[in-house]
Length: 270
Image (cartoon, rainbow, N blue to C red; front, side, top):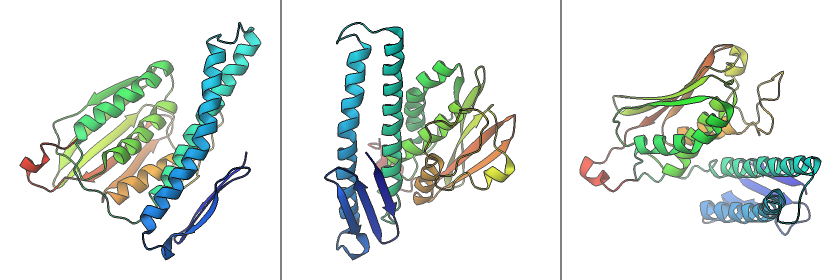
């Protein structure tokens, strides 16, 4: 199965070879371009998720011996199938999410509770940190709600945490810190990982850019994750910056504007 995705300022072209989804949408010509784009991306996601869900489901059945016992070699094959399926699922979601945030539609500014968002994202990432033998710590203070759409901000923060965990060796540490300045909240993700060369730091947020590694740490990555995170943060009126020292670690700092409505209207914010 071949996947083709092209997003430009005026057109979204999405197609799957051998699938019912093969469409070209001139979004600039649509009376409701944002909704049309969302509908097309949703259909595309469904077409890819359906076969991937089947692949993952059947690999689980085999892994659980539902179809009989497995030899050691067969079990390795099943593990490889599941791992590849999960990587492809992650790639599909990242590509389509990146396509969706290219829109210039205004952000739904309902306010996001930054501290609880950080805690929820960190809880979801903790299992992977433990699997890799990396310590994940939170050093957060009481901070204001921020401008934003919680699911997309969570996706951006999860990308930063996933990167930090992936590129930090066993025994290392990933730390999330918060601070607040005049009109903004800062969320920093710091790690004691392999670091990023200065030349690569200048390109790290470019779509499809991947740091050249001598090992397999970057295996399965699309090169879109950090570009997606930066795009999400920028659309919320914020900024995302990186500082890094090769061999000592990296720090990504996300700054987001404080939610501007009076405090009493924020009581029901997520």
